[in-house]
Image (cartoon, rainbow, N blue to C red; front, top):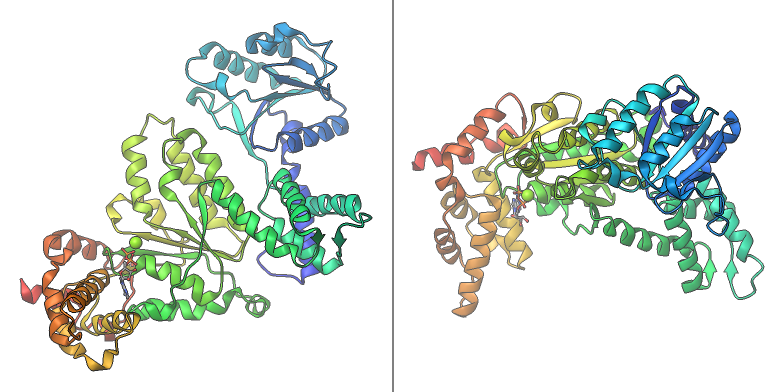
Length: 538
Ligand SMILES: Nc1ncnc2c1ncn2[C@@H]1O[C@H](COP(=O)(O)OP(=O)(O)O)[C@@H](O)[C@H]1O
Ligand SMILES: [Mg+2]
């Protein structure tokens, strides 16, 4: 869809059209005689209906295979499986009968993924032979499974297809059906004008059809009603479902932008883009910002800033657990990242926060490398492509401490709107950070000599300044004394800043950032920056 926004009504019908177009991607592949298609989804029933539609439209027979039924005609109910050929429960026998059949047909293989694992060389080999021979026939095998297994030798023969989550149109049909079922029930209060329907449908976006149906049922049972109040309930349920998926988490950010000391250049940049998500800005033709990458020294407010952005922009914050994508379930990584992207897009406009992406890449390299059949590379590729091509208002905030772990492709132009370098706070910034943390502990910053505190904390990160404030707070509470500038100076002395022990790492980080990233602090504020004053100390 184009980025130029249209009035809602038109946008909705455009979305519906896009859904139709997108859904027929499977049909396009079938028509183009792709022999082996792999659809990763939990929505087996929904996919089966779609394949059945295609079969009808293209005048092909439909067969289904599962390990319990063997190969049966499409739509055969569990009860009537007399025609079942139990020999075909063996995947090799089933594949053979696909080869032998001459009629145009679609074969849906359900949960075939265990047979694609390494030890099943004969099945994998047979599939490759089939792929070669079927290109000139009117037969297609569609594998459907919630898990993704791709033996490296199949990579060129198998086409992986995303099965999109249901769009507005499909959800509207579901909602219509549910309303029809309950509207005459005197025990239920069903009020659904067009506006409410639209809100409910919007709230359901991001869920599978089955999940959406369950959520609607639960709402009805719990509230004995379906109406404007349901929207809130649906949002709550959706949060739970998203959390259960284990990759995305709704993060309730409490941090205001004022809670971030310093970093004025970054704040300024963000301020100018705050309006970009409003309808007005879209009407003006402003594109939705893609995102930022915050690189730099640990403990200087990168994660804090990610949270503050969502508060400042009044957008929900979705935290994406990068580590888990590349975690133990390497096989499902690719599917996971796609699902996460789909969910994020479905709740857009939203801030999508990827914290410490460097960790993921380091992890994926050491544990994956060549041994994971290129999964990490594919997952990463999927993500990069999405970053550069996305049109939905999903603002990505990534943070990273270690640039050497980041693949260069990530840093290339066009992935992010801007790459910011977050350095140790300058003197002026340290004053600001003291102000923030004293204020947060209900202390009046004007009673302290901030110039002295800033001077004494040269080389300290924001996190270390906070630590100093907290530790002297403990001391003073124990000694039943008032906090003073002197007690804070003592607190500062109790922590050894990381910059002392890791000065070389930081220097190389700065060296790297020079010319490649934009400083998060303006030159005015940075003149007596952490770097210079630290050098004086050495
Ligand atoms: N610039 C800052 N202003 C105020 N507090 C800060 C700042 N930088 C760090 N802190 C404090 O240190 C904590 C840890 O910082 P964090 O944002 O997690 O650092 P990073 O993600 O850059 O490693 C924050 O929650 C905040 O309390
Ligand atoms: Mg962090």
